[in-house]
Image 1: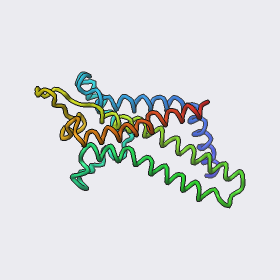
Image 2: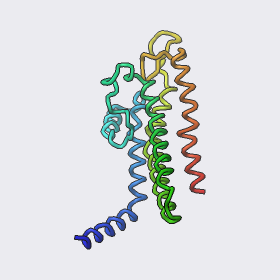
Image 3: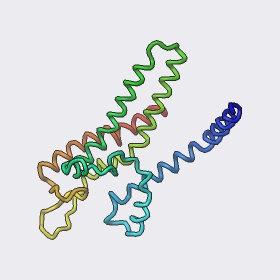
Image 4: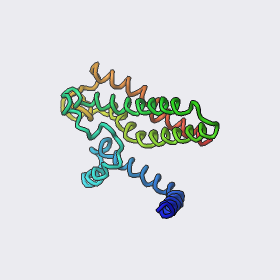
Length: 196
């Protein structure tokens, strides 16, 4: 049984090392395409939007499909989605850092390096998974719908209860501007720095 398990592990490692880059590229493409409806639904044909909506599983949005409105009606709107989409990954990263700090003490140098590498890989995986959906949610703060026939009236596409230019929208835009520096800019700069 142990020998069979070792053979399976070796076969899996070979297949994963061979296909890892291709799987990551395919997953990234699916994540990007699955976000089209939330940003481009008004200009993309309805059949394309329907196809993209079928790729919901590729969008790693931890709070996007949980039905937060069941907990409280105040969590149903876009501000709550934006807050959870941007704060949740930070909380997970803090848990990873705390876990790393706890596991690295009292270990040999090789064991500390192994723990560091494992936690760094988990951190990179977290960034890789949340970047597309979180970035899309952040940029939805800037999309206003001006097609109401009333001159000067526009509403946020992600939440038609929020009037563009209002205090609530201004607060969302300011928060989103900071989040743009952290997520789409910050994570990509970190990836570029790691690759250099």
